[in-house]
View 1 (cartoon, helix red, strand yellow):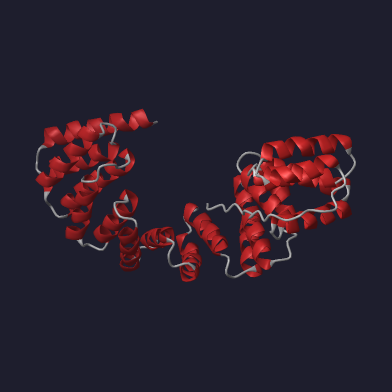
View 2 (view 1 turned 60 degrees about the horizontal axis):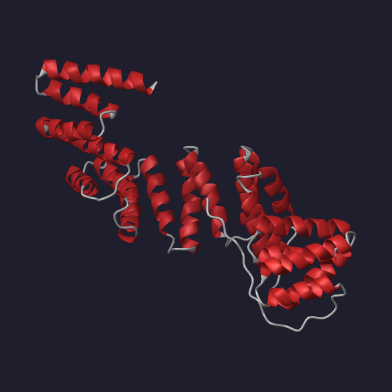
Length: 348
């Protein structure tokens, strides 16, 4: 699912109000983009003033500028726990110093992104902190991230509620529509995914992946005309993408346009780089088309190519057995059927 890391822009400002010598020195290093040296100074400040929030906010800033979002979030958490009021004042000062806004949200959101998939409980905790943002856009992004983390934790019902919460908070949050749609696609509920994908495309018509997903969804519900329309648009933007081309060929096959399906299948076979799994599926589809058209010798030829390319392509043996049987070559059909059985046993 897509994850955005928010950044900041340094503005050279004269800083005032920093009492600790180490903090003053660290801020000078930040101005010169010497973040490691700044971290050293701010760590000294936390040791010198262990009960103060300001040194931990400073340390958070240095880590954030270095894009170490995990440590930045950890340090900011410590600052707020030590003295929330002092931490807020220090955060505001650094927002002026750095020429940025919503620093607290950026730290907790980016920290949650980085912890997601590594330590999801920690990520969830930070996402919840990010949800305190006043800006509906940021709050909505935080809800979406919360939902993604819940998916990692296999709490799908809760995740769906957070995606919907994100949409209700900011109806222009494309990522929330994408996340909800992809969840439904993964769980074979394509019909539910379609309205969310259509909304995502309406908000962001330049994101080609959405046309791919929508084409897949229409293919799943057997609306082949719409599937072809979406997948053709996706293939125009993402040229030579085997998966898109395969789904397009499959859509043409399902709509009984065998000529177009075979043409696209041949286009896939001509590509320089194709995933072995997708290549086998393409061979099998072309074999199935030939059998459907009662062109059994053509089916035998393409399916033998499939097996030569991948001897573990079980479906190719199955289709080959059918093609040989239609040609009345019973011995060869039996051999192919036996190979199919052996192949299936190896898969178990």
